[in-house]
Length: 182
Image 1 (tube, rainbow, N blue to C red):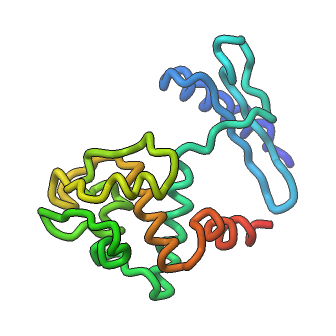
Image 2: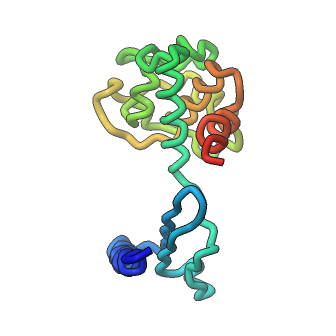
Image 3: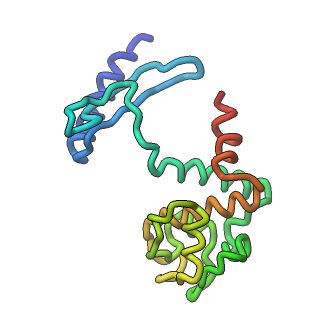
């Protein structure tokens, strides 16, 4: 495609600037269409200690992008009328018994990282373990009042999705998002 290489050269320069300015070890970016990978830009190191550069085939941990996937499915469930984003998570998961001293903590709050959950159990080995240890842990601020990044809040969102959809959240995401992509 005419101009595509020039575009990827500029993308590579921008990616290099981002890697350097953010002090990241490395990064990769790919652009695809329905049939093929149109181009890949890689910069930095995959393994700094070993001196291994990032290559087009380097695999990265998915990290927090799964929150976006769960968020899309949550909105789909809300649009279908199966999930109310604005009711207390205790109505969806009554066994959770999450104390709400400042008012209801909703899926919407958790999706915005404003559920007031400042304390987490991020080292629990399973979703069930995380949720079980959160029982009885009250919010520290009123829901909607303060942004506080919360992986555990998103674990509650995942459990709410599992409850209303009747299937594990990873299967739900695979069926709703990845399967249609082919």
